[in-house]
Length: 357
Image: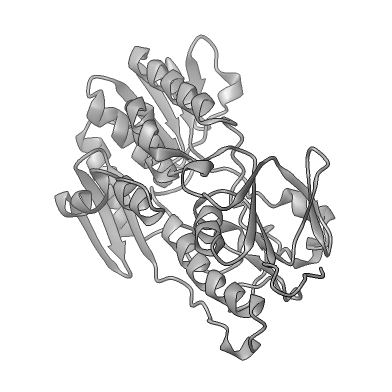
């Protein structure tokens, strides 16, 4: 798109998660940045499970975009189409761009405003508080961390975790999964592996597993992950840039393959690494300076490259303990807990975007 001499280039960022908000912050002093996000706030998502047992945490973990993106044009809407010059929103508005960044991560449609999201967490808290028995479906990091948060804050609750896999935390090593299992069992959480639950077939609060076991639960939480936020791209100019999993294929400079002015960052990329927030932030830290180079008309050979993150995972187990895996090394207990489980990096994340902890 034509831009007058001296006029700032237009950068449109789609998606207001970690990658999208961080790159908007890095670029807003250097470009005319527009952030398109379906919600009005940025959420520190890895604190969401703590918020379900302590809703007051949401006052710090939910941050209105306008509270820290002072020069970015915030467009609270969903992107539905892209062509070579503009992004079209659900309201039919066209947002022109010189450069585009796709950072839509995983789909999450709960809560358009911060107030709505806080009410959602308050409702979840009341549901947990009033229940005597709770079913958690899914033994990945979300299911394990939620079960841990509940049993630490409400030790008298009867919690059952059902996971269709052979072990917990399958995205990392076996030792980490075994340590998570041992910790949960030590807290009297019942863990059923190799089984699934049809939540739609419950009768009178009783759920049946694929093995025929009966589980009584006053409430349940589905923790099996959310779909990638890429389905909308299948009818855009980027439809041929999606791999079989629906991820955008990017080059080492974080540009979508075949498009010199379109970048992708975060979980939506096909980069072979564990999909975590710190990786999305690292993507933004490479894409932002590359965008600055391109906007200044400098040589492409000066662009920075990104190397896939090493396999590092940190899973919290309540407020004081956790599990850390770095490469093949696994550690559990209070030391990993001190790294993450206390404040869940909320203070650090707020400081990184220019706010008080």
